[in-house]
Image 1: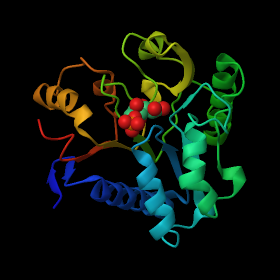
Image 2 (image 1 turned 30 degrees about the vertical axis):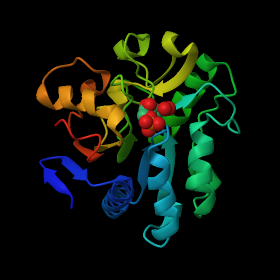
Image 3 (image 1 turned 90 degrees about the vertical axis):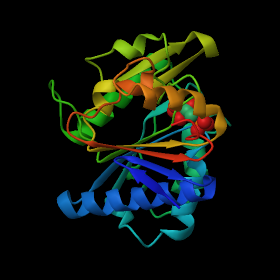
Length: 245
Ligand code: 6PG
């Protein structure tokens, strides 16, 4: 049974997390399309969201007018789109290739390019879509995010340069611990979203979640800097991840 405290949804297992995530995705999509005729959503990468995306494709195909859905990515690994590490490949296999989302509505990060170039090009595509070329920030209707067991989110890893980026929408971010570059949305973009949903499962996340919810005002972990100025945050967690909160 889902226990909801303010903005926390704790479900028994991953199957229920997938359903809670899919349901919230559709709810946010219907709300956005009803309110302003389109749904601009940034997808999370990693493994956790795969089950959410598969369930959307399996059971919610008829729930949204997909031609009004515009799909972006919160971050990308610095690999080509057919690489096993590619967030685009994961989302395409589990969701996008299985739904009638027009190809022109899918905004892939071109991570086969040099990382800085991919970031610049992605930011320009975002600026064109949101029709913003000045200092304003884009307002995504929904940004899905995960959390690493070091408290990172998107590709905003502890100790990396991107954490302090406050001008650019998208940056290339070198992650020394992983010996790799990433391309990621920056905190100001995340914090201008109408809604952020964290999808977090598994006991490897429990220790960090326990510290986060014990010190909600702390900024110890990168994920704690996701505080939308005028938007809602929903934490969807399974019991394994939430056992310490
Ligand atoms: C990525 C994600 C990253 C991910 C977390 C959790 O590109 O990997 O953006 O932030 O959400 O690392 O990953 P899991 O869902 O695989 O635990």
